[in-house]
Length: 325
Image 1 (tube, rainbow, N blue to C red):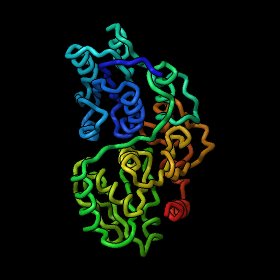
Image 2 (cartoon, rainbow, N blue to C red):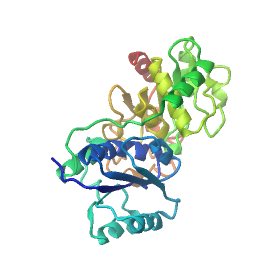
Image 3 (cartoon, one colour):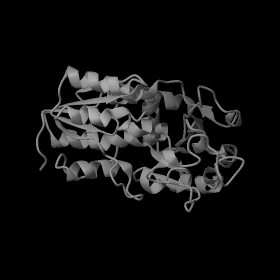
Image 4 (cartoon, helix red, strand yellow):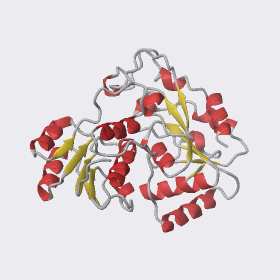
């Protein structure tokens, strides 16, 4: 059994919704391992909103971007925890935590195997440190009954019959964009197809073929994903935060993995993860930000865009969607 702590601070300032989703199993394992403890999370907006009703989380604090170290210092000064767990090591944050002298785990990235999923790795390291029990549970986002009801109404308004397919074309990074959406939409003729607007707009290829999900904040979108899941629908998109949010509220997903390796960043069952160019020699599963393609999507194998994403054909995605029924 793990040692007991009364005040736990989790620091996740990696910047993305997906990063926050991947740390949720560790947050919930800490809650189970230290019943009654105050458990605070310091993270970024808007992801912080996903924790607002989580019964495991006592308090959520937000850090401004580009001022993360100052936010960590302020939180440590505001209330000294007994235990700090941090995914974040840049800008001297790990050293700042270690200098305070409390129990801390500031390297959840230590010597990762390329084929061990990140979220499972976090929990395994905390278990090895004697801080949680080793049992792993997938990421889970808590929504209120009122939010679930609102999500049901929103989805029913745009897809009144049948299990919908929800497309998430936005990728945040060009290296994760999938080029075959128009062909997939054509193959889905006869099924209710919804699309999450990309940057607030519906892509031209979706006009007349896919209906946009109603405008909503992040928790509202999560509730709509949950409603899709309850109706037997599926969410498809690249390795991004919204797709991870969909999985964490119970929707089945089809994930499109190109520059990231599905064996390390894939979603938990019953998700179907499709890997483009699995043998790419330029992929660095444990150091993705150092890949030649990562920041500017300049693929050394293709002049027209990431070859790994293009390698995932619409037929394979369509078959995966059928398999999730």
